[in-house]
Image (cartoon, rainbow, N blue to C red; front, top):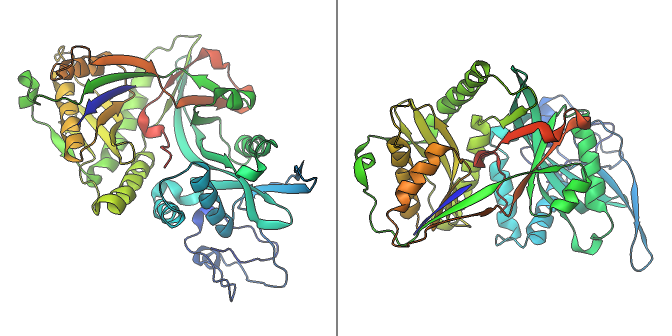
Length: 430
């Protein structure tokens, strides 16, 4: 990773399972009116017995009992959160992570993200452990977000499905009883079964916890290029290179070209027999999900949303980026590079990153970050470092939020896997 410094309630119904990812609005508490997606599916409303049904997982709920310090026994059940439980999950996440957003803002953020294409058809699911005697009391929660992967092994390329796990937390009163571990074991049961996920990934700074549960760390380095004392942004011939800004309307087409290019690249390559290469595909729904988050934060804090989503040079190279308003950082989500070898000095790539620096300055961000560490990106950033007044402007360290990888039922030897990892696949926590 390079870092460039630059100044509801679901109604209680009988024998019905509803996919919470498709819920658009909560049912009315007073008359138990079903939400629109439920009605569209022809679900008949009944109110003879009030009961929570958690999601569309079709999995048995496994009781998990703990003994509190006062001697009380609490029994928890696992499931995909109902609409009312989702609200409790969002509130819990807000307090657990000491979010600088208040509860209403967190709930509004999640509602905003629920209409993104990634969130549809089960692409985003909220899971929870809740009290058996009080289903509205959520004890532990997390989310899964769909990812598509390219798997290359012994010269063959396959597209496989998977998920990224995020927002894992437990209510303070119930910590230390293994609730998060129990919840994640249930989540992995779903991933390995109904979820049909070969791969799951997550990002965390507590490796021991996740390694015990079957996730293994992937090495991630962070290289910091300090240019906060910026002298000028016109350095050499790359400043004259014609690059165009990317907007929302450009993302769908470029992501399609990007994934197609990755497939061709793999088909033309010869894999090392003892190594397997795993790549998260830069699909438009994943890239735009981060844009949806930056839209919400930009409107909340600055009363405007970002218009520029990246920069491109012809059809040879482009960057997508994401505005992290909390960290005042412009994350380069993905670097697509099909530049011919006639650019040994990386002038085109430097011109693209120069656009990123200008965008960061436009929003008064203090840094730019990319997880792409290819030689051309390195050379471009070294060139840009010349604009800094600091004599030592580049430093390297491990990322605090490491990536962890898990494969279904040990399908492959993790030591033999090479993992490509860029920032578009990361679920930045707010």
